[in-house]
Amino acid sequence: MLVRRWLLAAATMLMPIGLPAHGQEDDSALTARGEYLARAADCMPCHTSPGGKPYAGGLGLSTPFGTLFSVNITSDRETGIGGWTYEQFKGALHDGVRADGAFLYPAMPFDAYTGITEDDLRALWAYVRRIPAVPAANPDNQLVFPFNIRLGMLAWRELFFAPQTFRPTPGKSDAWNRGAYLVEALGHCSDCHSPRNVMGAIKGKAQFVGAEIDGFYAPAITSAALAKTWQRADLKSFLKTGSAPDRTSVFGPMADVVQHSLAYLTDADLDAMITYLLDSPPPPDLPAPQKLSPLPADVYHRASQLYVDQCAGCHQPHGTGLANSVPPLQGNPAVTAAEPYNVLKAVLDGLPPGGRYGAMPSFAGRLSDQQVAELANYVRTSWNNQAPANATASMVGLWRSASAVPDYGTSAAADFQCPQVGGAPGAPGPDADAVAAIAAMIQGGNRNVPELIAAYQNQASDAGAASSIDALLAAYCPTVAQADEPAYLKKAALERFAMQAAADLSPQTAAVPFPAIDLTLALPVGHSLVAREPDDAARPVACPADDGKLVPASLIAEARQVLGTPALPVTAEARDGFVTALKAKDPKAVPADIANALIVAYCEQVVMNGSADEADRRTWLETFSREVIQHLQMLPAKSD
Image 1 (cartoon, helix red, strand yellow):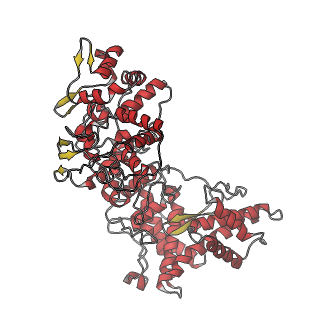
Image 2 (cartoon, one colour):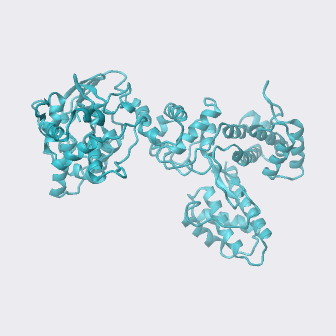
Image 3 (tube, helix red, strand yellow):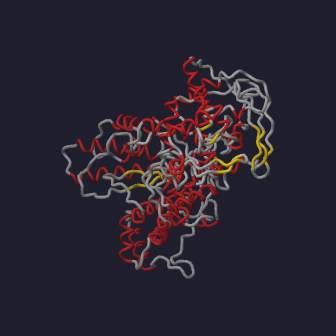
């Protein structure tokens, strides 16, 4: 409950000024409630210099990192925050982000304030907007190197901070939950009564065990420590007045807390705080982001550090990305798809610039298969992403092998040099006899990737997933090389084949089984796509639910319009026309969504056809699906 002055001021002095005003008027009741909440949050002492006007800032604080000065948070538009909007105010308290987008230091207790509810944030905003304007310039901070470099906040935020509004604990009384809210969020008691690690984050299980602050010691306020020496009545008297009969009187920074904050709280709120403090739960042993992760502790530790070292500089903490330059990973459908191929391909191959986003480099040369898998699982399960952690090192090995096709423009691609059978020195490669056997199948016209994989693995000794990819590329490449086509089309054909083989082999290596499907569907892989085959082709045909989860419902509706009521089975010319027409209706739709919308719409037509038997329906659907996917696969190659 003590005010950790040097911590509180470190971020507030970095808040911006002179931003557009928020024009909405607030009623007096909301403003009065905001004033009460500001008391509970103990805002004024840290934003007031000795002898200065309240909230005008300028308080110099000596910290282990240098001298910090609190900022002016009056309504002055030039030197205060009179030009802020509500969203900018919320961004500082809830997310720890300045109005100009820069990160606040953890000195500002946004790690506690993030729990403040939306209603209370609006009430606080109503109050601070009406603090009388005081023109007072903000002194420059005097932080020593490297603490004056804000880039270090990338690691801190990723490892120790997860924005999350306070949620009541089920099974606890209203008073207990109110006390928890006042102690943990508004009162930010942990900031002074808990020791911190070298990065300035509260030490897990040491919460409330006591810490040194401003030359004073903030004592332990764990439930066990308080229960040993305090009765409810004495504790309430101490919090409200600063003294308890025959016990002690407040001194040091705690005196400011009592004088400017706790003395103004209602009896009900003080009682609620005491209820919580005397029955507070054991402190968490993990930082908030790790506590929310489904990954094992050792995997989380390695993967989060990989993300900080390799990705956070561009994709930002919490995967938010950068507007108009770096796409977000948080909530990105390509990241959270059932299969992790998009993430794996992006990490291994990089991404070219496209649309409003810049290029992404390849990390294949600096990360091992295990590191890529753990990194993929980390981004797919962090920041409220709910994807399964199903990537494995073996799966990454597949996609690494599938990425071995020579890049267009290189001498290898120009000569169209096919991979040789055999591994690196000391390492096993594909089985030469088995490669020759599937090469004969391919030359005979068989392009069914699952059949080719099965044939190779049945004949080869000790055929691993990655070596199976190498084998299929070695077997298919000579056939492609003989085609009378430009090298870039050969390269595109071999790349599509490799990706399809990797997709077909991936289920063998997944840490978590992929969800079953009944139809051949398109999966996005970077800027291309592959086909996912049905798990059991013997089951009766069942069309996917039109619930917007597989593909946007609006796109399926447009696909139905494009198809109309065609004669079944449709011709190749009609099928290609459907693709062209749907792309024209929704030019921004991704290829996988276009393919799956058409597949779903066509499935409905096939199922309604009463003259066909089950085998015919399955054949019509599989043919339609594969050809639509292949048509869309080839479009990027034709446009290069």
